[in-house]
Length: 572
Image (cartoon, rainbow, N blue to C red; front, side, top):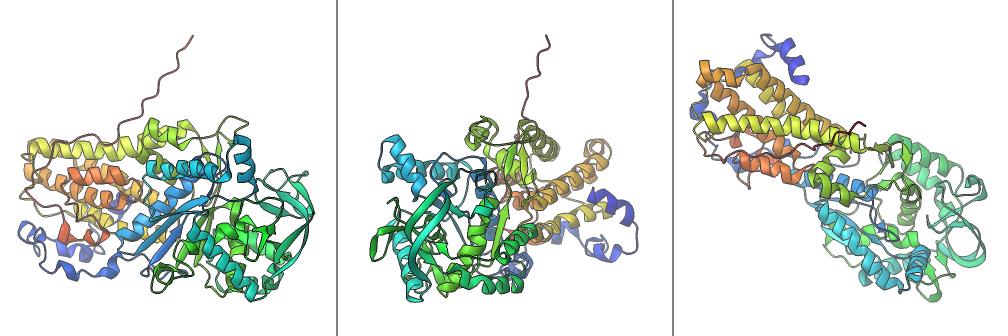
């Protein structure tokens, strides 16, 4: 793809020769200099490995990334795995770039829906959430999610933080007592106006019920309409993708009403300070997790001051309003800085149909991992859908993408390259590597530029484009090995064979290091086969100082990605 296009256009061109001069055999003694590590490896220019700066992130500061906290009324599904994996990919990429990262996930454990679900099972709400919360922690472990903290809204620390936030809003006179009458969805934990209902249901399809004149505290959301619109205008990158930003602008410009923030008709929630008849509206409770987990408000030189507000919230589009309107307004009212960015991704369907328990088409991520593997599942989730858009799951597309991109392309490239090295280079990395040709240099230059290309995509949460860069780099390398034919060179030019194999091993080193955020276990298995030391696998090691060393004994190659075999249908 990219490699072959550039190769045909530039090889032999005068425009590329200056770029390749540092590898010209006349100016560079390959074996005596290139593989010697510079003594001053600690002085590597760190700016080369920082995350690219954007309008909402300087690329260097401590960085918080969050999943939404997951509601514990049912077991985890593919949407939970999708959001968690996306955040994990970003968190791992940032850490490998040298950044200090706080990756937060957790469970939302209060509300009327939880109280009803617990009653239906004949248990108290705390016992119910204790049991169900484990399912979500188990999912994170199963999916190899590297979160730094797991917040539970029933914890004392969180409840104290929420009550402090409430008291702050009361002191600033943004909360008052009134009565509420209107439509409410228990499933969505959301109030809706008559005009928002679609065929008598919530816009999400959830059932609604009429709440008749219930005493409630209200948050003065209407006071922040102009302030929010000004903030959106001054921070155009705050909400992404742009289609979601337009939804929020339309909603706010339509006029904001004060928000009911307490209930008296159920008791499973954080008590309102000074009024035990009320519990807080679940979304005030839930949204505060992003700062309670950082130590708010009791933080002196701790995580809250360290990571906030350089925070990226990743959520599903169904909870966009709460994060893009209610949360910023609450923070403005409390004089707390707003997070830097909010990214709302789409929903999953299955075989073109909405996923629902009634249709019996729920996609269980646990079953996917058990049947196909964790890295295979992570790869598919990141590769198959443009991040931010809706996606459709089908077993056929899962198997095809994993078999083509991982088993056939990456796995086969590793296997045939390392098998040739093992059999033809004395079971060690190639020695006496000859000078690089322009074709070699072109492929190596593309590999060296992979970090920058991938980083640009990760910085804008274009995770599908990041994955495409990795797939494209592997495709280019397969094209290179097919063109160079080292199996034929074995009979005619063993020195050139060794050089070609060395080039591929070096490209695979870059690929495996940069694949760690997406397929961490498999990427590290490849690095093990390449004999890359475990402490030389960050992005700071993507320099010539750490190139594949000559004459290092390698293990016998093993398959990394077994093909997923599909039973052929039996014809009658």
